[in-house]
Length: 186
Image (cartoon, rainbow, N blue to C red; front, side, top):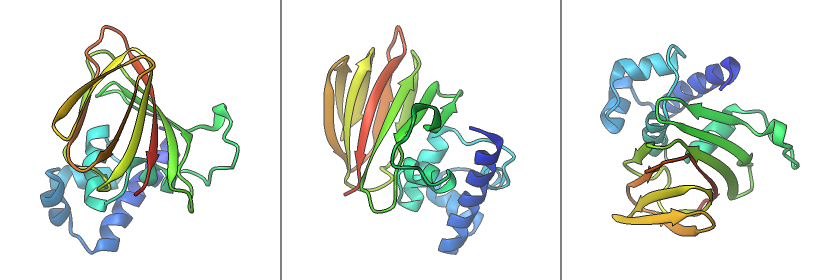
């Protein structure tokens, strides 16, 4: 993520908390993220990981892609490959390309995800209850836990589900997994 995008993200995180009238302590209690980490995120002193953003988005009731779209420039109708925003979380081995970014008035978006071998990302709660996902694996394999059920999804397979509780993305390896995720708001 570029420095300008990171600065806008930090600012937006602070705005979201302020719009709700929450203190850092309130948000820390809701997300199990320390007050000091939240403060440093909002000041742009540290970059958020996928897991931290997931917890914050759940508290704010929005998908991560919507949060990122709020800090990215308004996307055009035709999104050329070179203009698709890419976000990387080196700590978790996750790369996310917003192929068709969220847009006001539209309920769906398309995301390309790449998880390095051994990556394991869990989300305690969905950002929006009932969020619809269609996950299509292009290369490699993925273990996805949704609603307590573990699904092994291989190249060419598509898993369709709604998020009502925790989810977990695991790449058991030996190579990276690349997938397309269609996200539809309820």
